[in-house]
Amino acid sequence: MRLVIRTTVQCAVPKKQLALLLNKVLQFCSLIKTEAIGEELSLAFVGEAAMRRLNETYRQKAESTDVLSFEYGEVIICVPRAIRQAKRHRLSVSREIGVLFLHALLHIFGFDHETEKDRLAMQKAEEKILGSPGLITLQGYTSSVNA
Image (tube, rainbow, N blue to C red; front, side, top):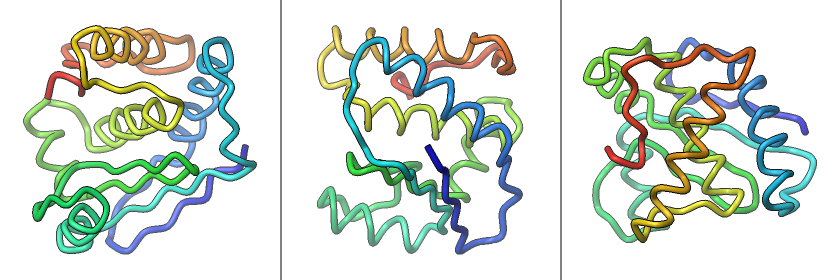
C-alpha cells in the first residue's frame, strides 16, 4: 500500500517511521479483519483552524481534535495538538505523530472505543503493534484510547 503524505503546516514528518507503522498495522489487521481501503492511504498534516473546520463538518463538533480518520483511507493529524500532546506524554513529536497515526489506522480497520470491551481490544492492538519488532516501544506511553 502506498502512503501519500501532504502537509499544510511546517512539520518534520517521520516518513520512514510512519511507513513502517503502516506495514505493521496492515500485517496485524490482515489477521483480524480484511477491509479493503484501496492501494493508497492519504495522511495530511494540518493546523488548528483547518482541523476545527474538518471536525465541525464531519463530526459536528465545533472544536479542534488531534486526529481524524476516514474509512476510505484518509488520516488527518493536527500538528499543534500533536506537539502539545507530545509534551504532556513526554514523547518526541515524531513518536506522538506515530501514536496518532496508529490510532487512526486502527479506526480505519474497524476498531473503536465506544464500549469498554471495544476500548480494551483497541488498547491491546495498539500495545501489540507498538511492541512489534522494528518499532520503538513507547515506554511510559498511555494508550490514546485512554486520553
